[in-house]
Amino acid sequence: MPRLVNHQDPIVSIIIPAMNERATLRNVLREAGRLHPRSETIVVANGSTDGTAELAKKSGARVIRSAKPLGHDVGRRVGAEAARGSVLLFIDADMVIPAKELRPFVEAVLSGVDVALNGYSGPVTGKRTHPVVLAKHVLNGLLSRTDLKGASLTAVPHALSRRGAETIGLETLEVPPLAQTKAVIHGLNVEAVHTVPVGKLNPVRARRRAKGKREDPLTSLVVGDHLEAVHWLIRQKGPRGGYGDLGRIRGRVRWME
Image (cartoon, rainbow, N blue to C red):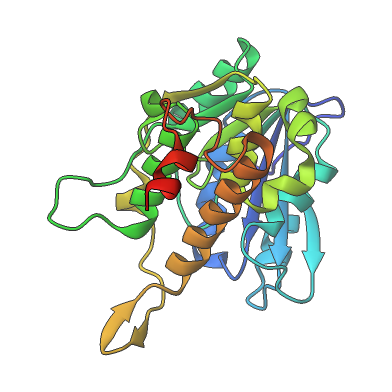
């Protein structure tokens, strides 16, 4: 694999949080190196103990190390704070996505989109919808962006403009649904620009048993992130999230009781 070259004045910053992803990182970095001639690749080695950081450094990436795990999605914020490009592209170290599938997100931001989402909405045709998929659709509905369906900053790949990231606050990137909510409310250009079926690429996570059922430990965390986004929206827009009450005379109803 050719050694990565980080441009001194990058246009695109490729941000890759990684925790013990040595097995896939080499191929992820290979595709990152093919993405744009003026790019930098930042690997946030998040509590890794398998040589992930060493491999990334040897490959030419900029490496930010944390001896202890930072927490889910915190690496995105850390990488964004170190980035110098006008386009921030976020990918994961455990999914090898070809450069040709990443370019549409960069091109969209360069063309004026502030938040370029992966159009992947998750499966919705089964008898039971996964709680995370449901949460994504519900949040977009509350934001009056049903056109986005289940597209979400929770899913990679996605890209943000420098202006967009600074408008919502880099710290907000730690909670992707909240970042998406703030982007919409602040009037940023949020679009689903390309679909990468990450559901098929995402590795099976460790699962635990809860009341006899196998459960993904990230499910409750990600659903909680969406609830945090809804809470922020209610604080900004009122208890009905900005929706009207359709002329209901609630005081009259209580009086009649």
